[in-house]
Amino acid sequence: MTSLQLYNAIFRRKSIRKYDMAPLPGDILLKLKEYANCAKPLDESIRYEFAFLGSADVKNLLPIKAPHYICLYSEKKDNYLMNSGFLLQQIDLYLSHSNLASCWLGMAKPAKGIPMLMNGLEFVIMLAFGNTTEPIHRNNTSEFKRKNLSEISSVVGGDELLEPVRLAPSASNTQSWFFSGDLDVITVSRKKLNLLKAQVYGKMNQIDIGIALFHLWLSLDHQGKAVNFDFDKDTAPTGYDFMVKVKISKNNG
Ligand SMILES: Cc1cc2nc3c(=O)[nH]c(=O)nc-3n(C[C@H](O)[C@H](O)[C@H](O)COP(=O)(O)O)c2cc1C
Image 1 (tube, rainbow, N blue to C red):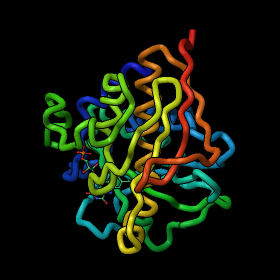
Image 2 (cartoon, protein in one colour):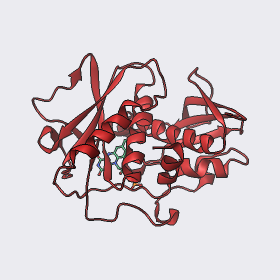
Image 3 (cartoon, helix red, strand yellow):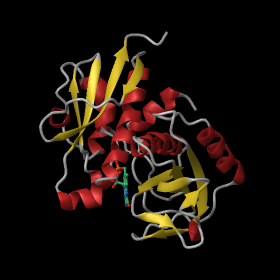
């Protein structure tokens, strides 16, 4: 699958919560596994693995039942939550482009008997996927419930670049991201949470930032630009925590 196909999927994808429980054909699962094996990490120093589970292998606090789940297990180190979002969003877009339904599941865990730890890697999050009888795609971007660009960005001239990022999915649609700086270096920050909200969304919102970063990577790639992610701590706008600086160079050849 090409970056352009993933990029185009951004403008149509949506979460699907009702699945046809018939398992997908083996060749479709094999292709997905091959694609997952080639996923691009945000931070190459973090070890991770994907694992595929069936409907009986998952404990979900919300009543979303699917024939398949893809789980991300990761080494627990700096940026691992952003890295997890970045990696699994590639699968979300791949599934949408492949006319398959999917939904991020922050509340689901592997069922009893399925390990939370695998080869020293910890379970982070999963996506449900499969076939559905519901429409898989949105018809246009007006069907997305999202903040306006002016609420999430102060980057002058960055609207075209950031529109695909604005459309990124996030836990409970919190969209806690903010983009500042300029078209050479964009600072990505995350809204500070009070103690109560931090308990619920503290981890999820870091995964969300990783999702947004993959959309930003695709958007920059679409504009023929190359990207370097700099995680060295820096300042963020008031009310936000610094997450990463995205250094952009003019041409990726
Ligand atoms: C990290 C993360 C966790 C999520 N967890 C759940 C969940 O547990 N249950 C659910 O129904 N949807 C979940 N979602 C889906 C969001 O509610 C959904 O992406 C958001 O409302 C935007 O809608 P859209 O994906 O249809 O564009 C999650 C999304 C993300 C990114």
